Amino acid sequence: MQIWRSLEEVPSDLGPTAVVIGNFDGVHLGHRHVVNRAKETAAERSLTVVAVTFEPHPMAVLRPEHAPTTLTSLEVRAELLADAGAEALLALPFDRGVASWTPEEFVQRVLVDGLHAAAVVVGANFRFGYRAAGDVATLRESGERHGFTAEGIPLDGGPQVWSSTYVRMSLAAGDVAGAAEALGRPYAVRGVVVRGDQRGRELGFPTANVPTGAMTAVPPDGVYAGRLRRLDTGETYPAAISVGTNPTFDGVRDRRVESYVLDRTDLDLYGVEVEVSFVERLRGMVAFSSVDELVVQMTSDVDRARELLT
Image 1 (tube, helix red, strand yellow):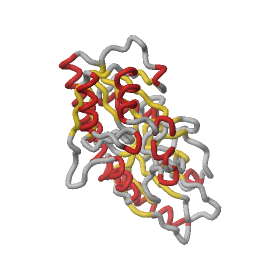
Image 2: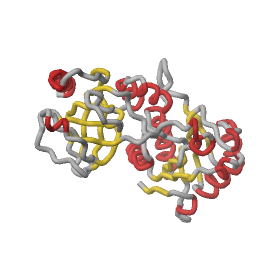
Image 3: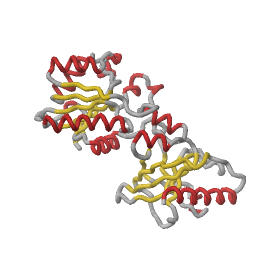
Image 4: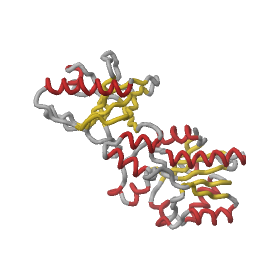
């Protein structure tokens, strides 16, 4: 997939396009349905499917104190959008200048001059332009003037509509299965494995330690069944995953995602970028009174994870 990080990077010889627009954080099933509709239109009219997103999230610029945690980095969004059928991605740099564009300015600069849109597909609740003044009806009216069609796709899901907000709410509640239902896949975080305190190895459960950023959405502290995938080789392993600060031991304050690959003590993952996906929550985080109690519980967690994953 081609990724353009500004309008200036869009090739001047780009032909007519079918454009989808949104934050696309998480690329959940609702997002995929929008892209699928654009694919159908593109196939009928020989168009290139281009996704338009914003970097950073507009809320991080307009109201940073209310900015949501992110479900996917730009790179992961690009991978998921490509898998859904987008052929190129315009990551429009969002700042207060862009925020001041009227709906007509956005249409002219991005859709007409930049992407030569012949068709535009968005979610039915799409808003754009200064103070979100534009909606799907506005887009259709602009399309009539500029020669492109515009379509708003009804929101999917039920009884709860699928949205990035719904996925974040599910994760915050520890409902990783609910998040997976909306996403169409288990929720996952990525990172490079770093050296931890190596207590897991001493206890017989060596873990791959992935630090989490403050603005990355992570399920609440607890133990989960899931999978670890090496991004260098693509190898995937079932895993028991701990999220939290290891309250049984004093002095550990950094929140971590630690994955024990089931029945493997021979893996050297330091420095390897991995993806950790969450399949089911096993329990909350507990501070044990002794290391022996912790080991007994860890053994039980691994047994339950193995039943769920293998």
